[in-house]
Length: 464
Image 1: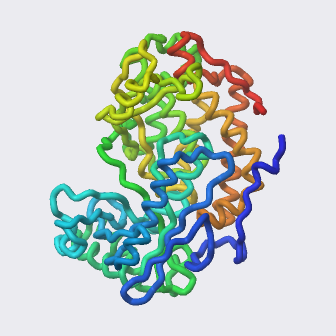
Image 2 (image 1 turned 135 degrees about the vertical axis):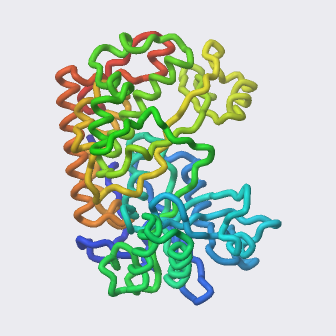
Image 3 (image 1 turned 90 degrees about the horizontal axis):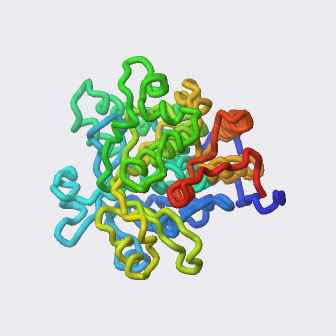
């Protein structure tokens, strides 16, 4: 293998120490977009560089640009012409994380009007969240999940995220609101109070490197998109007061099917119907979140998995009619109707409504307790998509040549990066050993199984 094509290089003008910190003027990714706060602080949003040979879609790239066009303040005519838009920002008052909700403004609902009501108007369009390294959240985890998902072929349907900073005074004002608008004693009140204390301490804070720019005048974190019409995925949750990961391993009915070492043909029939496709997708979704969480030290997964309703159908490639792939569409079936009109839909496989997993809550990882690893979930997987397996092997081959990608682009510390490398090695060791022994079958190839009735037999070795 030619390792040169896997080498990623970006200019690094600082020491790669064990601690991360943000210098707003430093060029970290593909492009820095700057915003001026009313107090004259120059905030930054970083359109990220991309890992070599990773699968970033056109929609991913567009979303990154959209996230980096959002201004926390009113914008001038010149800024509008640059593509920037003003958004409303309010403290998140539910759940446990002291994040900031970001809402789209309209001609009828201006930034000032929305914020004056604490963003409580009906039918507001929440387009994203700004989160920092506080409470259980960790900025490198939010950024890391997005990019590692794409490195492994887009698994987990992780929403795009970008690195962003905020004027410290702006953030302090919202932190005070979050503290004052939540009930004393509630966990969300405690986390807002804690964040307020860290921000107020400035460069004297014990979390300054993980939370503040090097001059202490800005906070930094990540903006991630807000998925629409998602629901809690109860099928992937097993109640337990002590250990949810172990409960999932031992009692979840779907996971028992995933650890079943019989051929997939003995577990799911190859007929194209909703029940069979849904189960096949659920098995594949489980392998994806377990692999990602094993690599990225996720502590808070169980109870934080969502799904969106999607339609799945088979589609021919526009330029190669013999190339057929599974295509997903939302409830409106707009893409399906367009593909049908263009003669690209494979007629024998009607569109089916299924639940498609989406991993949108990924902030409690990278430097946390790896509950998936502790429960040894990866070693119990008996079925996997052969493409995902191959992507993992390739990631192991390239990761040591791309330290700067993680350290500069994603704000990983040296400890974070070394832990990720160790977890990749560990995942490859576990899966390859099981693949070689026959305990793991690389047979979760939806297209092949349901179009031919034959199971795939992926190679346990890295393919060129």
